[in-house]
Length: 441
Image 1: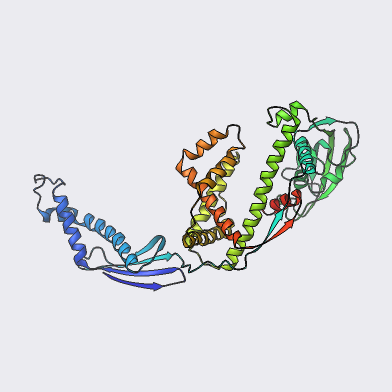
Image 2 (image 1 turned 135 degrees about the vertical axis):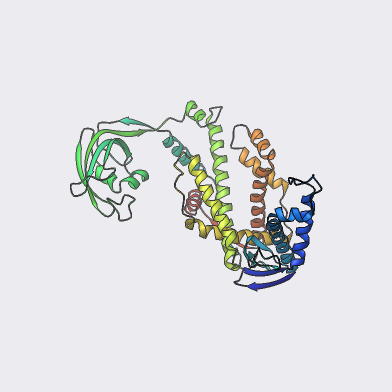
């Protein structure tokens, strides 16, 4: 068998392979002989059909099958001979005329190979680690947030202020003309709320001071990047009818409220402990994630690496499918296919990190620790009413368990790298750490 390899780019190879016709003919004759014992041909008893008859009737089909098998087997032999490690399936270009039995088999195979990583550079690992604790004022602030999440509204006969809820009808026009979505009935908006500002920019300020029964006309300028192209960059005239103005009414922190948060005893001390435990888990995760992201960014910066397009394409498609599944889980329309291009940069980053971390695992013999896997599963399970059921659920499925092991192994690699890093601790408040975490998502 003749083999030659051409480097067409850093990771792309073109392999030209020639298989002698004698090898093809030998396999064809062997296959025809096998068929002569099993096929049925009119006028001949089973197992007594002459080989020439079998060849005349089935020779073309047999040759096609043999050629396909020889391409697969000879490609495998060739990459082992040349010590190459292909990524994905090769693109085969057949050079032989399949109807000419006197020819050798000749074809080219184009494919990508895994990049060679001689050593992962882990120099200059200088990272900052936030240091914070959960204080009583942090807990009180969180309880206030939980109260607001369960607040009711009480109608008032007073002017609307920031954080008031108004119930309105409106009609909007641009230069006297209606546009798509220009009318609303019984719309409830909280003045100053982020969602209100996203839907109707500057509308909250325009509605301050209105009372139930008022009619107010206002002009609102919409930004050029607004999602509705009919009003983007234009001024809309709104006629607003106010039906209700309401103020927030926070629930008291009593036994019923505490039980509504999942604290069965209804006791305040138990609520404080539950809230503190949750906040400390969130803080630990945010700090760990902050450190992890710094380590990974330095790892990528230290190790510029070209990765196979096939792996990036596969990861991109996986991310697209994950987004579609998330949309379906949220009950949203997933008929629109997201553009793969929006995921390509992140997919390439993931592939690069995956290859670098795999090399660190191999070179340093890092093994996933069973106790760490158990700890992670127990942490997740602790947020459910029946933790033991959740733990058994994870361990009952090898695939689910493997996903957890993959996350744990990544954490172990990061911990291993942090041990070798220069770490500077930065004192911060709980809110500052969490705000930084949210902004980096």
